[in-house]
Image 1 (cartoon, rainbow, N blue to C red):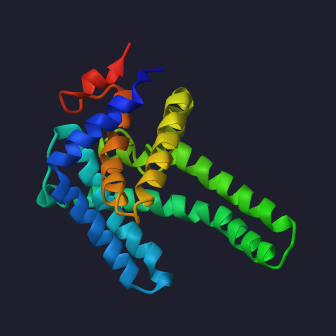
Image 2: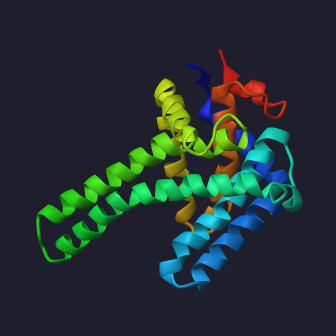
Length: 219
C-alpha cells in the first residue's frame, strides 16, 4: 500500500489545471452545454460519449504535464473502451437510481419507507464511485481491458481504501464549496478533478507520470 498526500495531489492538480485550463475547461463546458440542450432521455448517452474525452484529457495532463485537443481525440479506440466502461457502470447504477426514484415518490407521498430507499440508493452510488473510479485510467494506461479494468479498480481501492476514501471525501467537500458562490467555483473544481484522479492513480500504481509525481508519494 502506498501512502499518498491528498493535499499535495490537489496542489499538483491545481498547478496543471492552470497550465491546461483552456483544454480542460473547454471540454467541460462543451459537455455541459451539449447535455443541457438535448432531451433528458438522451442526455445520459450523450454525456457518456463526451465524458471519455475529458477523462483522456485529464489523464494526459497528469501523465505528461500538458496536452491538446488533437491529442485527446487521436486514439478513438481508447475513447470507445472508456465509453464502454462507463456504460457498464451506468447500467449498474440503474439499480440505486431506481431505489432513489421510488424512494423520492414515497417520501413525497409521506411514506416512511421512502427515505430508507433514498439513503440506500445514495450509499450504493457512493460505493460504486469509490470502487469504480480507477477503471478508465487502467484502460488508458494499457494495463487492462474493459472488463478487467473493473477488477483492477476494485483491487486498487481495496489495497488503498483509506487514501481513496479520503480522496473522494475531499472531492465532495470541494464540490460543495465550489457550488456555494452560485456554482461558479465548479468551473474550476470539476475540470481540475479530472487531473486529480489520474494523479491519484499514477501515485498509487507507482507509474511515472509527470516528473512531479514522485514528490506526491511519501514513504
